[in-house]
Length: 358
Image (cartoon, rainbow, N blue to C red; front, side, top):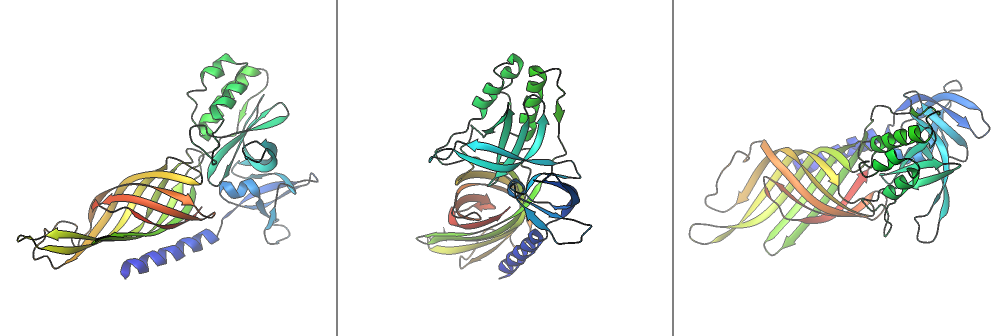
């Protein structure tokens, strides 16, 4: 029961930590044009695209949540600035819709550039004249049956600039990559208009992940329980994350003794893994792969007369971790998940449910 106690304890600690969101000095600009200074809640990219929580330190009141219909812009003391961007979203199958989000300012010049995230997916909004165009990844599908427009839109913006046009294929889908493209583009389109970059040091986002799964067929079975603290850097690559956690796996296999009699062997593997995960496909259906290392120990229960001992038996040792799988979004935080993993030994594929907190 010890692995269960540790994992449950970790779950409570992570949830409690997520409940206490930090705040930083900043300002908001209301629809009326009034500018108020105080403290802003630090949220993840998804939250800041929809709303901002502000507290006036002079009045001492609690935090008030504002939406794009109430506050037109806000900014943190660290330099991040957000403005309400209204644009036409052509992705829905039912037809285009008008939307408004808080976009993070990245570049100003002849064509301005903003970014925002939704369901953990990075998007860009670029101004062409008086309109904002939505740009999303064309290498991966961000919505069911909808392929991105990234390369097409960059070619459209660079239609009057040969130098920028040559850079389209080499531009990576990240804030740093797209910012560099628009800085070059703006300098080309209007050399007399100053180009300003609003780059700031990359800030990571922390989240929490837990998974329970199992499989059984014939005399073979596996039960898995794991919980991780997850760190990601959406500005660098929204598909990449580093995970540190606890894991328990119980595998039942069969082995033959020297006289040909089969015996059950129960491997109970406890580990502290550190992995790097990459989501190959992002959206309602997400394929992923990961690799890393772990401190692992194994307890073997069997009536097999003799079995080989190793450095993991009742002692922690370093193990290679590799795995892959797929998860399907059921609700905003709940996923159906299936994965295969090798850690100490090649394990059985398991299927179960995962809860992911941003």
